[in-house]
Image (cartoon, rainbow, N blue to C red; front, side, top):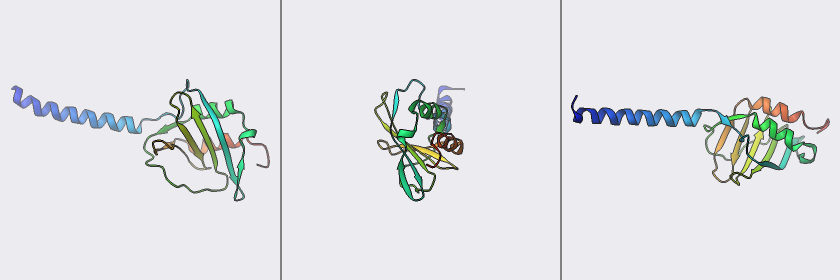
Length: 143
């Protein structure tokens, strides 16, 4: 094969490799927060009976961070925007020292997602119902 015939083949293979790599990066599950990330809760709210309740004082911050470290997410959630406020919804705000971004985690009984206000991107949290269950067990009875 001559050098002229190899160039288009090489370009097609390079393009195919780039597209495949991008798709893998986009859909490959990754940790919601990094193990080494020094993160802190700056708010935690729960919605019940049409009321918003501040529940940060009820939560053990390290327990919440351990639960969140066990979560995986993907980047395929799309742009963030408005979302429905429903009874039982839990919303947590984190700030991580590593990148100074504020992250918001929203968990419903059947799904969960995270977003940051800087990039406006939403990440789907895999097994969001389990996340909601684990977080809900940290609240005292009657909240």
